[in-house]
Image 1 (tube, rainbow, N blue to C red):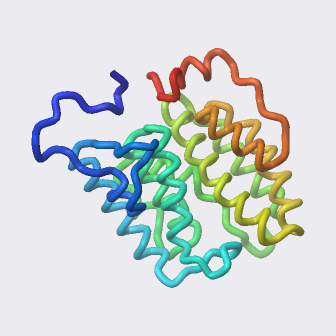
Image 2 (cartoon, rainbow, N blue to C red):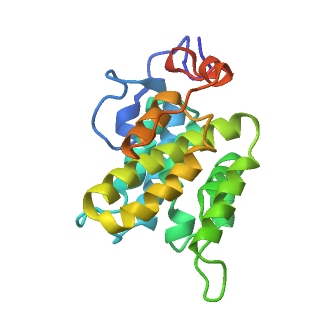
Length: 229
């Protein structure tokens, strides 16, 4: 049994995970059941992100409410059967970067793990006279290189899920920016090698780049499509 499966559940302890993420659909082709307390934590993150992004629209989403983006990222992360903290972080990954929310608020409300994950996912903001876009993206790549252990696996997978959703929208709606974005994400994908292999392959397919040959270490971590730590 993997660490993300729950054994010995009693009546009343089950909760439909797809409802917790607000998709209204089953995950991984069947409903994933987890402890109700975990689902409540995810619901709390979803509600926080929804309020933080209230009124925001996706730049490349033809008027779509912004919150739909982190929800889709969270669904992919849940499909990969990562930790509750990883799913919370997927929902919250843009609130510090794009909303009136501080990193300190995330640490205080959701704990050190989620705070750390969101910190890594947050890009350096544009400041007049500060680093240009290329330099800011290099700083972001370096943050991922500093990760170790479980956080390197989980944050890499969250970022790949984020990149997939952004890549699909940008590729369809802004061909000019797509050329810039594609190069940036291709460079980043070479660092996110511990991400869930099938998800990593999907991103490379969208980028129209050759798939990476996954090492035995990565394949063993993700044996049978589930993380084994």
